[in-house]
Amino acid sequence: MKKLIVLMMSISLVFLAACSLQPPEWAKPSGKKDPKDLKIGLSVSTLNNPFFVSIKEGVQKEAKAQGMKVIVVDAQNDAAKQINDVEDLIQQGVDLLLINPTDSSAISTAVQSANSIGIPVVTLDRSADKGDVATLVSSDNEKGGEMAADYLIKELGEGTKVAELEGVPGASATRERGAGFHNLADDKLDVAAKQTANFDRTQGLNTMENILQGNPDIKAVFAHNDEMALGAQQAIQSSGRDVLVVGFDGNEDALKSIEEGNLSATVAQQPEEIGKLAVQAGADVLNGKKVEKMIPVPLKLVTKDKE
Image (tube, rainbow, N blue to C red; front, side):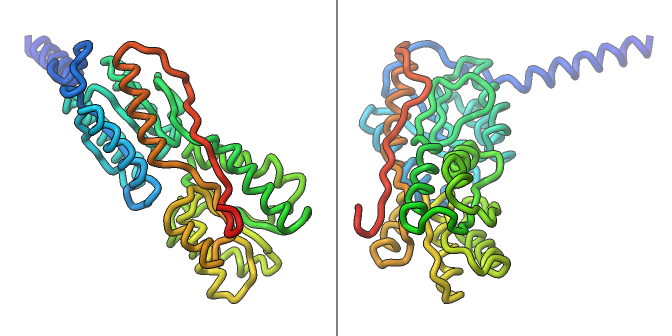
């Protein structure tokens, strides 16, 4: 008898635990709503980067124009925190999730959680490896990597020794920008060193210092974002070396650095436009409209002579 009671209690606990993973009924989407009643959950990889701050502002401006409420959470470049953040947004009853993944693989579980109760998901700048995403709003990162390589080839000639500062391992932007860069660089440049600096300015500085020490004949560096590029430029200035630096994003600090003759170039995105288009796409999905699986936002190479 005691064994039977223990067994029944165990089954009950498992059942309760399973139920606790589900959001309350009021948090589940319930069909069409007036735009003024809609809540958007925005999960950003980090608000310590001006690029993602601009994406957030683009989301907030468009949501305000449409009368929607936005709840913003900052993952602080922590994939585990981002998963918890998204689960919290689901519990808060958001009607739409906009996610800028820290890690494209790790975020998949959170996307699938949203899928299980019918909350549409739109990803911004970076994709999710698994789960049903209504659309990805992003620049063509692979094309941008090719633009950076093409610029270095034209400026310095074929066979030039260059370095590469990679972004966060696991982020789709890291994979795609690197792939685009190597599409041209593997045949026409000598990529003598490549290391991750996690899209971070301080890590960009420290990593570039190490690369310069080990590769005295490096003539250029491609950084997967402007924050790393600015850190690398600082390390180069301190060394007294003449090394071209190309970044990616087109943030305000990078554009100012190019104007001052420090950074050589950046592959500029339009982060506010990414945020705006993500809200519009999400609104279309909520209204039952079909959207493209990828919504591209144009890129532009910015140099001192070409802005």
